Image (cartoon, rainbow, N blue to C red; front, side, top):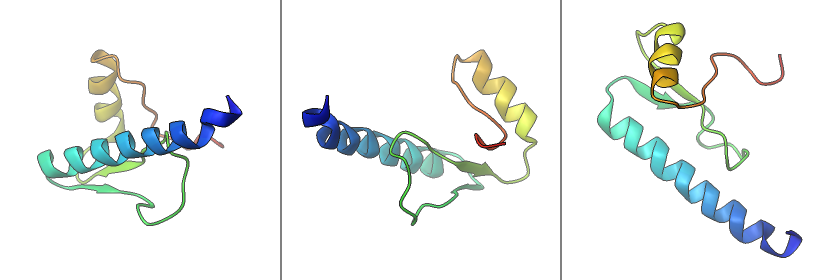
Length: 74
């Protein structure tokens, strides 16, 4: 696991970046929070302008996408 850690992190980070770019290209009013910061490769933090968080949460949950409207540390 240790030997593969760097490669796996890079692979996951590439997937996250592709996901974030795709969301921004397809959905008006979206932005990635902390895009320029060093962050965990498996977490995307995306804002949706003019949309209630609960609405996004419910719609994505119905599509079997795991999301949260709050911080993991709260």
